[in-house]
Image (spheres, rainbow, N blue to C red):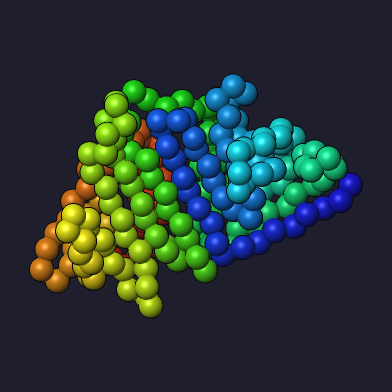
Length: 206
């Protein structure tokens, strides 16, 4: 059986409760499937999902490595994915927790969020808050540029350089030299806790 080994500094955490989509991108895209209640491997990460079952899924004791078998693009393969940093260990721990305990979206969740990491650092954050009719109520967009973080506001368009940001008490709190920006996070505890851990370890203290 062919062995595919992966180790990358670039990865992503994506969650959209409105369409029941939870995707972890760590070398490959892993989508949580509601029917078998476990993560599956996406063979087509740049288009409509094409999910295949992962067999013999195992994590190292410290969550530094994920191994599994799958029939991927018509060939049986063994995959070995090694965490390149502490953030990816958090992602693997989250992966294992949901595979063991199951996961379902909740009715009171309102936030579609995406965290992207490059070279082990938090590169961009996008969060969109919608109501039941999919009307946009609020949004948060932060990106990294030349080692600094910037928050973007729309209508009118403005860009603020941030001096700090943190996740605390279900709020994303960002500060510039002159202002504080607070975004209320409406996601269930397991998502909130994981996002908080990823942000805490990826950004300097306030």
